[in-house]
Image (cartoon, rainbow, N blue to C red; front, side, top):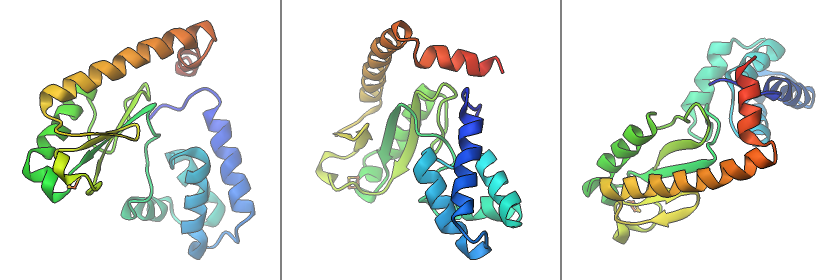
Length: 185
Ligand code: FES
């Protein structure tokens, strides 16, 4: 995942600060990873490398820890976060097909974020609305009976919102401008 303009400096400074407050030992790794994720929203590869350098723990071990616990995310959260329920009730009525439909539309796999960071896609366990299966949570809003046709509708709605946000951003010199600067690095 390409870093945005200024993101590298932000990552290095957050990791520095968090490491300085820890005793830089292996047994402190989980709280360190938690704190870094809390501040950055995810655990970038650069942060894990920097933590490895600061603690002397091999980067592969840190990556192993981060992938073992599902509390950690290795990709940045998208502007729009789509969570597809694959609990038993949702799975039984095609939750996996719903997930595949989102993967096709977003051109990413579950657990990933689109390169422009507009969308991230996750699978989740039962969200407690089984009577509405298959269920999808879009930016904290629960959607029920999400068939592939409804997936198309949800994506169109999100794209329409992006269009509006894009216009606001452009007039305010916001995200799209920043992204282009970052890509030129
Ligand atoms: S299994 Fe999906 S909401 Fe319960």
